[in-house]
Length: 317
Image (cartoon, rainbow, N blue to C red; front, side, top):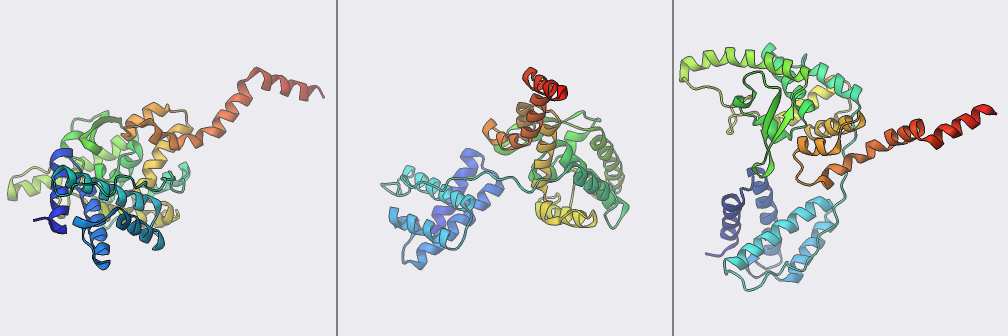
């Protein structure tokens, strides 16, 4: 009953049922725990009887093979949660991972995209695609991403129902099933309206065959019924290449960061950006404050009485 596969599968099922863990998080935890289990097996051990030192040895192995600190931290988190679950279920009488500290996470931003680069990507998106339908869809995808700062999983799975009726704002369901409201820019609204016209026209045709309305704004033949994150990732890379923007800088996540960075640089409030990004903690949003430094220096130099006095003294000479 308590072999490693059962431990992992029952843990993941509990995570989904009790905590509402997303599919993507479950998959990541599953991969991490299977890797841990396979490493233990190579050492002649099993998850059920792994010790504190065994887990530390595994984490040292992860360092030796060059895994990033963020990956190691996620793997340790999965291991800790698994053993907490096993303890609560009575499978073990101890929690071997309880006193193990994870690596300090270093919050890093991807290479910053300039406003000019984003404009070039957005312009190119409307010209990229094999058909008129693809080009209208691609334009809508990129405009919505940059206008709202949505996570890629939120964007590709956006229900058609939330964009009906010429909305000024979008209701987005994010991590932890939390909902938030994000305003739409004029260009995003225009791109959305054009895509809805195309989608509705194609839906009329499809309804004749199956009679079912389209559930997702960006439908596809994938198992999920909508455009996949993997497909969108490659799509944005191709658009960046055509736009003559370094493709290694351009990812869906980089566009989300550009949304926040450019808003801050142009005077937006940090709390408002926290709300729009869907960050539960303001400290997560504060990684963007570096973009405020130059603006704050200029603000002081232009408005502080002592700064003005210094300029006057220099002019007198």
